[in-house]
Length: 298
Image (cartoon, rainbow, N blue to C red; front, side, top):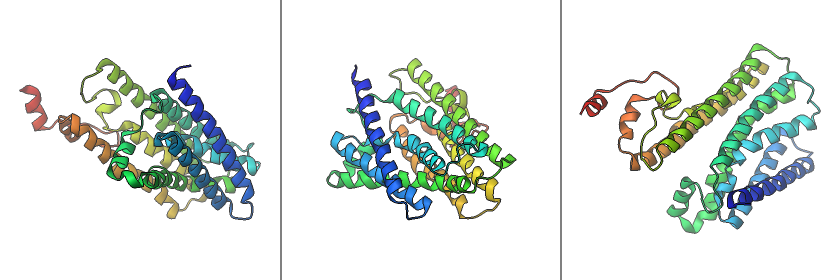
């Protein structure tokens, strides 16, 4: 067994243990509201992953949490409420499981072992090494756990209500599946590009990347808008729940993408021309700027 497979086996064992902790916490907190007890179980599982990340000295242990915990929490609730036979709920679970399987597989295919940690976590550690265990807990793990759980509140309300299938709910599932396909295509295009240009500092302008600088992030945002449609199709009202997908969109527009693009510009100054021509997030028509055309014809 090589280093990668060994580390993946360790991660699998840790997450199975974490699932057990989550189930135990959920069953133990039976005297409080369903959504609150699920949230507390989520936080408990995050703390377990955090402790193991300190033991293994690698905060990237948290990375698969983003994709594996949402379907786990929803399936836990569906089984608890005995609603597995209802088609609208199954439609949500199928769509979200497809997203989770793709994202988790993509993470696993890129994972090399515990000797490598996400560059963003390295930066956080470098800024304030003495309080890194705390910043690891709050910034790297608790914050995204809360953001993702907020996305699930609408889905949990949908499950509790157990509505009939309608066109909005159907559209929500189709949007999640479409978003998953966009992510799959974008990631495969990026992998092929990196393989073809190994060792070269080039900007990809192929496939979906011709029309969005971050088509994989666009797919991720679409997933959570699709989840929101399950809530909207159930209650047919615009209320505070719409802040959930808005918050997720804001996370990518104002934190994830600017941080990523700042890093890219450090090694690929020509990326600034790509920024001017290609949409940041949404797949949209590209434009050729005069500065780029002059550079291209020089």
